[in-house]
Structure formats: structure tokens, C-alpha cells
Length: 494
Image 1: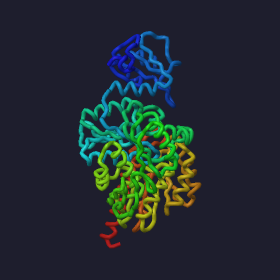
Image 2: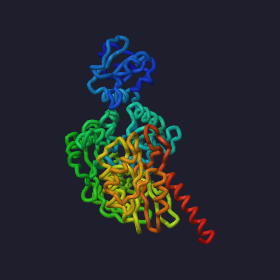
Image 3: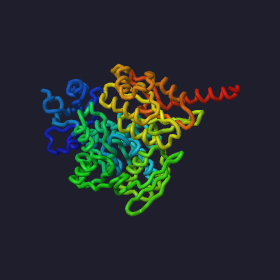
Image 4: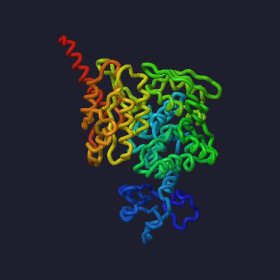
């Protein structure tokens, strides 16, 4: 593709055919466009020389990064990351007909997965892109790939959507993280409908505080989506009016979802052994449904997903009917197994204060005896939430096991100490595997154990090393050992 086409500039003084596009200098080949993007740790401007040496035909960078070199075409922009995203979109030039996005602190992965499941129930070829990779069931040529981050970089994202189009996918939903929005990864994506789940404390270490964190999320509605799109908003979120004002200014149609008010309203919930019975209303119609998901908060996630489907043109009755067939998302209130005494164990990704509180409160109605929790906090991340999470565990769980999450470069014992300051009666076991085993072995009839914080993750970051680790596997191993020992005791009459 010609550079003039990528820049939409027919009057470009010099033109050249672009054979590839990347922001990674190591991937540059002859004829490539290299984007020298500023980053939090590494500035791409420092690799411009290497990119030119590798054969780059054009360089996108800030004005102050331009070098005295006429061998390449220079494209300078004050916000090169934003322009890069649009250039990438034009380069791949193929996106599914319907694209939905989900942003918010908690619930993005579940809402995205449920949206995909509802679309598939309604007969669409649908995919989800996010924390779990790229999920497109039944399409072996696409499958599920690890993208490395919740919201992929523009090249990975646009390349994936082009592949999905070739596979016949016409509906895609993706998770829009605050990092991805702040770094302009999603600019250039034709988002027609988007959801805002909530805003609670997270990533303050990166954004510098609540205001910047909110602005990053709000970019989806105020800048990324074209005017006149559809916004699905959580009416129960305290800042919903701030998002609604942005949507009004952009001419978006708004669909609200809530327990106390909303276009889609959750009127009643009743927990059951395997899920919950819910009653909802929409446009004067009442729907009684069985939702096969544990945790009261999952009803809101499911209704937000239904809102996205309706906002994308789907039939409301069919969307609500599909809720009865939803499957749990890996690492999100996922049942890992049962203890020999009958106690249940769940794994959840809850790693923020509000998420931990919500999950513990949601499990409580299902707990006939004691509610236990195993959790920790990540290193090199928002330190302010550690004491908050310790306090939440003390208030909402009966038995607490404080362990390591991803300590990264921090001293694990120092992280645990900050948590323990607010829950001094908790049991401290640094080794996460041992903590899970101890919690499982202590379970009794009617108990429920929540292992929180890592969910679907397959590794634990200690120092600069990522060690293989999976909460689900650890729980199942502990349950197997316990159940085997219980069976042995019964067989010998102990």
C-alpha cells in the first residue's frame, strides 16, 4: 500500500510503497513504516537509527525526534501513537461488521465473553479479544491466541480482526483497558457500541490518580467511538452521569442497566445451588430467567452483555433467552471442585478492593457455614490498595489466608505485612501453593473457599522470573490429595 493512502494525503511530496508496519524496531524489514512511539519505560525514538539501518522507508515520530536523514520519509506528529493506530487500521483495511467494546475496572472479561456467547446463541459468528486472548470457538484457523495484554497493540489487534474477517466472523467484542485507551491502541477501530461497567480503584500507579484513570476510560466514548453510536452504561455506578454527559455531547444513544433504575432493570434475584433465578424488565416486558452463574454480580455482567447485543441490533427477547445458556468464564467465579466434606472451591480474578468485596458479598448467600479466602497483592503496583483489601477480607470473610500474588521486584514479606496490618488474625503463608493446600485441607461441610487474585493466569512473577503457576490446577491438586486421603481413611476404617 502506498504511504499516501495510509496517510490519506494525495498531495504527499514523496510517496513510497509500504511493505509492512511496526512499532518494534527488531521487526523492521525493507520498505517498512516504523513508528517510534514514546513509552513509559522505553522511547522508540532511540531506535530510529536501527530501523533505518534495517531498511525502513518511513519513520513516524514526534517532531523533536526527526533526524537529519533524507534516506527515509519523515512523518511527525505531536501524538504519534494516535496517528499510528489510524495508519494501522488503513493498512489492514478489514474489520468485522459489528464491533463492541467493554471498559471499566471490573467485569470486562465476563461481559465480553457473555456478549460473544449471546451472539453465538443468536447464530452469529462471533469472537472476543481481551485478557483471555482471542476466542473464536469452532474456528480452528483462528482459535484462541495469547495477545500478551488485555488490549493488544494496534498491529496485533488490527491483524487479528483481519484474520477473523477472513474466517467469516462478523461480530467482535473486545476489552478496552485504561492502558490501551490512554496509549491510543484502539483509535481507528470502528466501535459501534460500547459498555461502561464501573470505576473503582486500580492502576493508580500508572495513571497517577482517579481523574486520569477516569479520563482514560472515558476516551472510549468521547474520542474513539464515532458520534451517534450506542453506549451501554451501568446505572448503579456512582459516576454514571459523568459518562452519560460525555455520551450526550457526542450524540450517542444510551442504554442503562441497573438494579434500582435503568432501561434494562434487574428486579429480583434469588440464589440457588447452581446459580440464580432472576427477573428483569425491558420496555415494559418482564422476563423470568435462570442464570447458571454463581455470584449476584454476575447478573449485572450478563445484563450488560445483553445490553451490548441489543445495542448492536439484536432482538431483546432472544438476547435474554440466551442468558440461561451462559457458561462461566475461565478464572471468573469458576468452580474448581468440591472437598470431600462437600465444601466448594472457586477461583476468581478479583485483584482490586471493589472486586474482592463484590465477590465475597456475592458468595456469602451460597455459604452455609464458613467463607474462606486466599489472596495477596501484586508488587510494583498500587500500594494503597493493600491495606484496603486486608480490611475488606477481615470484614467479609470468616477465615483469611494471606499469601503472595505477583511480588515482582518487591519483597514478598513486605507486601504481606501491609495486608496483614488490617487483618491481623489472618493466616500468613507466603508460598501460594502451600496456602491453597492449607485452606483446602481446613474446609468443612457447608464451607466455601475463594482463591482470589490470579484467576486465569498461568504464571507467578517473582523477581524478574515468571514461574509456571495456575490457581485452578493448584486447587484441584489439593482437592485430589485431600479426597484421596479421605477415601483411604474410610477404606481402613479410621
